[in-house]
Image (cartoon, rainbow, N blue to C red; front, side, top):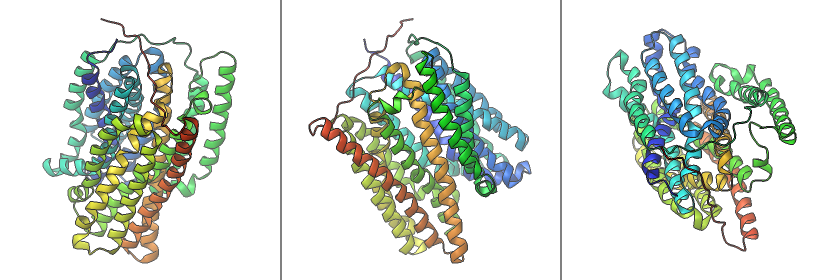
Length: 483
């Protein structure tokens, strides 16, 4: 029996998810004022951003597995309450050390909450409704990433004074409390699956592998890539060991942290996870490049810089909601068309910013950004639906966590590589910002070309396997326990 409160419950989870993803990018515009007031070094204040992203990624898979075993509603509510408390602690931070610790704890809470979102969608919805729900989730992901800079700039503009940056964290408190009350009232109580064991060895191996891969990236501005490049090799070796361990656990009737069958035997999962990681390299990296170009190159304020890329967010939000309704009909073809559109939009934006006069660059780039946003809305939410469509509900949390871990690692690569290339071009060309933005955004588009190749291969495989028809999203059922 369908839960009559499922759509209202979905909005509670989306509000919480929006806050956690927004906090990845919203803080960047406030770093200068944080550094001044807290008398912090540039390297330490960078941990306010990178520490959150790192803790977020490290927590996802383990938290998803815990939600599968102990109940997603319970984990969601606990994680959301912790996120609200950590936001208040970050806003009240008297020193940079306090702020960094609060942000690390906030990242753990966010990473614990995020996989419950996709798992709850799979739990509460089925058939065409699931596609629409994932469409709203995709809009949340796309818009939260794109509007972070403009939201941060708007808060700083409204909250003037030395303590204005604190409101970037405080704003989460009332919104989070409302989402917490709604979630406690509306989220269904569902009997969790067999708890089993948590696989502590798997937790340690996966955490160490992701830490080794991400640490050089999050410390890129402090020379992490040149000093810690060897950690990439260490991380790959550890992750290979993690896969071997998980296979051994499964072969001996244990409870693996992440069932490797998701990648080898679950149709569409490996493809969707690979596509997401490649796409987020370009998608996440271009926003920092745009911020650097508009603020440092053209002298825009943080708010004006954020408004310049708003057409992308508008297009992404609108298209994602519609795409969720169409994915059951068109399948992977929808993401193929979306990738072509987002590549055309961002490629056109790079060309406009390279050629247009400085005083009209933002206006002339707006149509191309809108096209890119429309394309992005047809990539993120349909890909989530196609990736998780055949994942058993009992594994939904771990599967969603692994998918989002790939996105976060891809995002870390993009936010390190594309701004790094931007600064490199500035050095070589003696501060030619037009060349820097064009080459950096163009590199982001190149990663999307790789994602397009993966999507086309999957689309052709689906066509050959279904007689030319896209596969329908499969239904799933959950046992709801009434209060």
